[in-house]
Image (cartoon, rainbow, N blue to C red):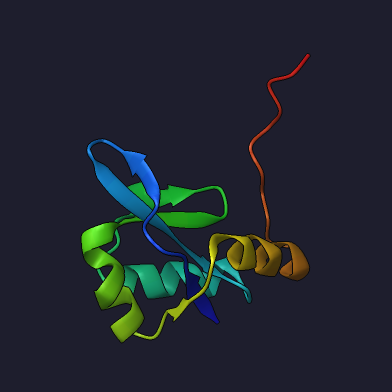
Length: 88
């Protein structure tokens, strides 16, 4: 299933959502490509999607979830790839 959280991450003067799959990266890449999300939006285990694309992603079948639900689904599916710790 394709999941999307609300646009809440500020960057480059915009708000961003995260688009992820709880099934496979292949499913996610296919969905993103089919709906105009460029490869540069890929970030380890999700795509960053600008707020102005949120409604289109939901209309295309992405299921709205909270950010916590999205991360929990990625972890449960074994698809979570967190950033490396910078602590020494």
